[in-house]
Length: 200
Image (cartoon, rainbow, N blue to C red; front, side, top):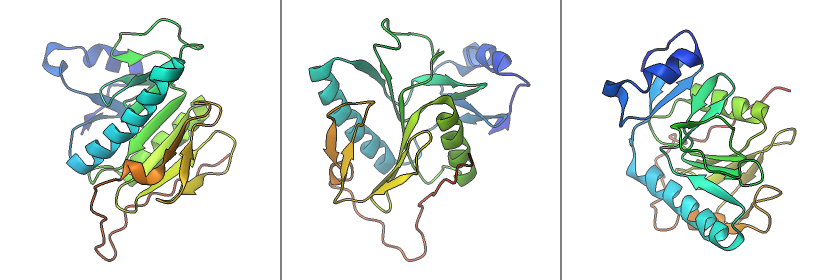
């Protein structure tokens, strides 16, 4: 973690400096945070969610996905979700910049051991304020939290069905598919569930 520039515009220039090319950075609550692969399990889960949404999009062709190196402007901050989705209706031509100036319709964040509870709560609240639906996957409890603007959060377990709602019409995925072949974390007292209270 490093001290952040005073403004997002300074971050946008800083992140393109030669010494920063090839790395992924987020601007969260006034701090620059390098996004690193800190947990293979979290990466595999993100890849499975990406895979099932991509299969859906190959058939429906209604939008585009970004893997965990595609960033977005979220107000004055810059986030890189593990999976991002933006519809063709909102952005007919693909954006090739490091950080898309449009917010995603859907952001998927998969919790890893290096994630800060405070930062995740902060990101979810800012996603929601920008109008983005957020899915937060919790590997250690094999649950997915669904956050929709102006709606009560929903917690899905392994036996539930994850639905795309108005963002991904007719998309359905068994939650357990996201966690297939992963060993459930059972150490007592080490749950990493991150309930995010978002004030109205």
